[in-house]
Amino acid sequence: MQSKAEQSFQILKEGIMDGTYGPGHRLVINQLVREYGISSVPWRESLRRLEAEGWVEIVPNVGALVRTFDTDAWQQGLSLLARIGGYATALSAPHLSPEDLRFARDLNRRMGEALGAFDPAEFGRLNREFHELLASRAGDSRLVGMVCGEWARLEVIRKSAFWYAPGRAEASLAEHDELLTLIESAADADTIEAAARQHELRTVEAVTRYEAKLRQDGNGRKHG
Picture 1 (cartoon, helix red, strand yellow):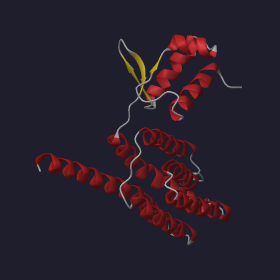
Picture 2 (cartoon, one colour):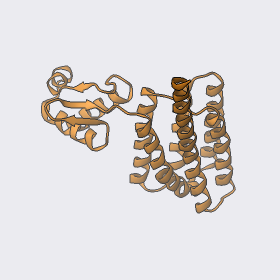
Picture 3 (cartoon, rainbow, N blue to C red):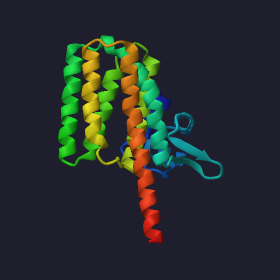
Picture 4 (cartoon, rainbow, N blue to C red):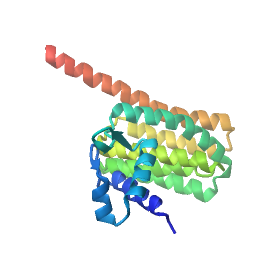
């Protein structure tokens, strides 16, 4: 049975992730106590835990606010995932079963369908599931938890401000196939880690270039 602290933590985290508590929302302990019938102490513990994990910001004389994420946070998060996710994927690769790999290929196929249907939310959900699966057999629960936690944070950022560099999604699908081929062919760990890491870093680079182009085009229109 979950403790009250764990219950309150899950309520708040799920509420942030599903948009019930959006960016900038003020989490008021007295209101939460009335709404859920859980005393104030577990809520305070949960808010401190959420602050430590980067979900909320506790502001003096204001209270706990759901963090407002921006593209810088998205890029930083994906850069971190490139490192820890690449390492976890390399550790996991020898332990992925044929069924795991078939399911991963099916996820990638469904991502292509979501892209064709102009459904970025589904594309993002499937992409997260794909990468969490490839890291799931790493044999290090703390590392896998870090990977899944960072993907969850990126999911919230994506929901609040989804954007993607043109053409990058299609390239990402091809890179997924290449990564799976490396795993299926029992490539060495360094090769798999480098491929997984570069896959995420290429997304960061593509988005950075696209953002710079948008700024440049905007400046050009202002001065034109």
